[in-house]
Every structure is written in structure tokens, then in C-alpha cells.
Image (tube, rainbow, N blue to C red; front, side, top):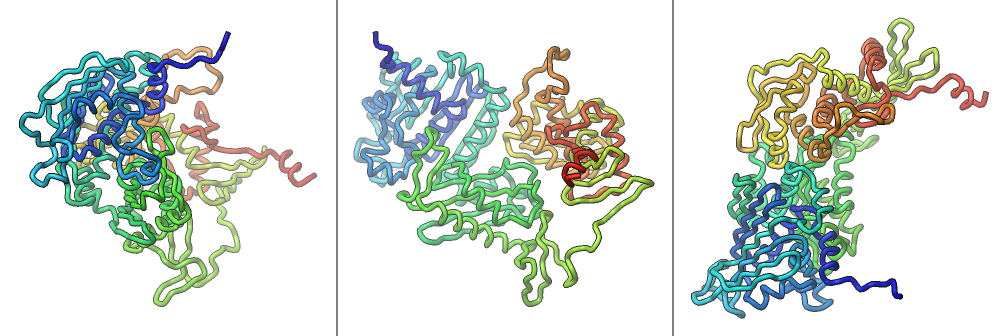
Length: 589
């Protein structure tokens, strides 16, 4: 009896769907990219219940005739490539021929489409016909498909292509069960459409969710204009713009000024030949260019639009085409690194002199992890380490956020930022000594649309934690009061960090009485704990501020009174104790 089975076509398509269709945003991405490849000048996306109930994508592109409309749902059916040579010279967004069949296998799908011109007279060939126009006498085609099986094909009135995807994962309940909250899935959809709109600024994009318009972006004349449409003038003013070309490569760059860093990586975008991708080497090149100029806990904002010869890059690496492989990886790295360094030289805060070097009319520069600091020509290293005393308690600053405190038991190495985070975290959770301070002038914070949406959904949590915030409209949150512990905090950075954490850590409801949990286990996935952790981070001593011995002593006392004094809210140790016995062993005594 053979044990090797040949899988059915239906099962094969469901397996393929698992690679291509991870979540509703994956469907949106594939359908929007098909619309881009169809020479569309206007693309509209609508979703209901974060795409779980409905995804609707319409375009005014070239469309298809009846034969192509039916054939398009077969696996490995594509108009983008014909042979292996085409695979190494890709100029379209799609090419694998798996998207429609994969989506159709796990949903109830309807497609209406009609040719905008007879075969041979497509846009670009016939100068009298614009994309999206229909010729008199051309009848459209309606295709209905459920679970990968075509149930109906009929004539209809149509212009361009309209695709409806309903009940995603209706026949794979296990996949549907693992989808995140509507807020999280909406964030990924907004992020997906935003990335496509950024890389194809000449196309008009409209996005609606649950009947409300998220954005409507007219066709732009430049990348700068598209960024302005999406993020506003204040955001653009914090970026430096430039373009470079060398050895068959060109790049348009928008990188943040040194004073406009973020606390997370949420505003970092890489595009290769118009395709949004994730590439470690390009991202690393950007970070290397900023090295020594910004604190290590800060992150640059950047938009990298890289164009290379199609034969020098392989997009056939990942099923969803998120990753790329360059034939000259080192060359791309050097090109991006040098391009970003040149961009940063336009910023007045850029430091071009290295340690021990001098240029005419400048002072030597000491590069530290807190940035570039002009120094005198004297010795850069102190003879004695800074030492603070309060009674019998000496405190030695070691660098970064570390101090050493000798005790009767041995030596305590304290991360004072992590320790302060733990203390403030528990204060916020227990609402201990947390008084709200009403701002004289309420602060308006404009956010990316995904972050704005998730904060609106969690306003009640912010208010419970002492952050009186409300919806000001137009992707803007208004903050009226904040806890006194956050008086010196950057409110805009705080709101962005809270939103980013809520999106990265989808909430799982935790029972009030958690029984059978190991000692020290915390239900860190609750909304209040996520918000409290970010507030604690922003209200705690930072690396650029060195506490004196009195403050360290107070901090150690508060830490000892905490429920979990051994780690910060993110799980990092607050202190490490080296006993006298361990020190003896280290010195082989």
C-alpha cells in the first residue's frame, strides 16, 4: 500500500495560499500590485472589519477579456513573464502567477473586468485612448469563485477591474483564528497601501475602512509631494532630501535630521525598483552612515528609493516578494552608505572630523554614543573616574546607564534607566503618587494613520493612566493633561511609541485571577501594562543624565520596595550583584 499521496489541486492551492496570503493586508498588496501592473491611474481600496469580511479593490487599468479573466485564476497563470529570460529582467510588480489562485482558494471572490481597448490597442499604443476608458460595444466579464472553484461566468457592464474578496479564510478556520485584532490588521492594511502609494506617486490612491475614508491621495508630481500628502509639512521639514547616481544605480533619499530621531523603527521604508521590500544590507548601510551621531536608543527616519538594473537584482526570493537579493551586495551597501553620508552633510549638525584629526577652522571631534562633541586640545581621558559619595555609599559611574555600588554583600552593578523604569512602571499600574498635570496649551500630535487609528481605539486606556487625550481629527491626537512624571517627556514621541507597542504586542485578555502561573510571571500583554511600560520608559532617567549618589540611593530604596525589582518592564535586568565570594574566585583567591 503506497504511503506517498498526490495532493489534490484544491489542497495544493490552500497550501500555496498559506505562503502568499498571511493576513488581509497580503490580499490587498497582491490586488493593488496587479492594478499597478495594469497601468492604472486610480486605485481604490475598501475594507470591512479589517478585511476579514470584505476587501474591495477597483482600478481603471487595462482590464481583461473573458478568456483571460477565467484563466487568471489558474495557478502559475500570468501575463508578466513568458520564459526564463524574463525572470531575470523583471519590470512588473507581479510575476509568479500565484496571487489570484491563492486568494480565491481561501475566500469567496468576485471579479468584474473589461478591456479598456481591443487587443493590440492597449494604453501607450493607441494615443487616443486613456487608461480606464472603455470602447463602445465591449462587454465586461463577471467571474464568481468560492474556495478555488469557479461557480459562475457571465457578461456584465464593467470598466477596468473590480475585485471583491469576501469571508477570507472561511474554509480554513485555523488560519482565521490566528488573525489579530481589527486595529492590528487595519494597521497592516494602511501600511501596505501607504507603501504602494509612496513608490507609485503618479497614481491616485483612495483607502476606505468600514465606510470611513482613511485617505484620498491625488496623483502627485514628485516623491516630495506624495510624502507631503501623507505626512504633512512639519514631518517633511524634519527630513533632508537628495538624489544620487553611480555605476548603474540611482537613489532618491529622504533621511531625518539629527534632531528628528525616533524611539522606534516604524518610519523606515526601502523601495527597490518601485517595490517595497525589507533588506538588511540597505538598512544596515543607513545605520552605519548615522553611526556616532545619534544616541544608540534612537532610530533615524528614512525613505530609500533605489533603482538598479533589473538584471542585477533577484525578486524571486520570497513568496510574497518582500525580500531581494543583489548580485553586487557590497556595491549596493557602499552606494547607500555614501549617499546617506552625503545627505547628512547637508544637516548643520553633521560632524565631519574624527577623533585625533583636525581640519582648517574646526576643532577635533569626539564621537560618542551620544553624538559628536567638539573638544579642546587637552587630554580626552580623565585621570580619575567620577565618584560620588553620600555617607558610606560610594557610587561610581561606569558609562552608558551603568553605575557600580559597593555593598556589604559585594558589588552591585545597576542599570539606573532599567531600575527607574521598573519603579515608574509599578507606580503607573498601581496609580501610586501619580498626579495629572493639565497643560496650559493642549498639545496636538499628528501621527501616521496606522498609529492614529490604534490610539483612537485605546483612548480609554490612555485616560485611565492619566493621559487625557482625545481625537482632534485629521490623524491628530490632542493631549490636554499628562502625569507629572512625564512633564519633561517628548509627548509626540511618547504617543508614537505607545501606538507602536500596541501594534507590535496584540492584546490577549488575561484573567484577573491568574492561577497556576510560575512565580514572577506577569501578564505583560494587557493594554494597561503595554501603555504603562512605554510611559515608564519616557519618564525614567535617560543615558545622557547621570544621577548623583543621593538619587541612586533613593532609586535603590524604591527598587527594593517593588514587586518585581529584578527586571524592567521589557524583561532586562535592573541590577546584577557580584558577591565577595565570586570576586575572590575571579581573582583566584
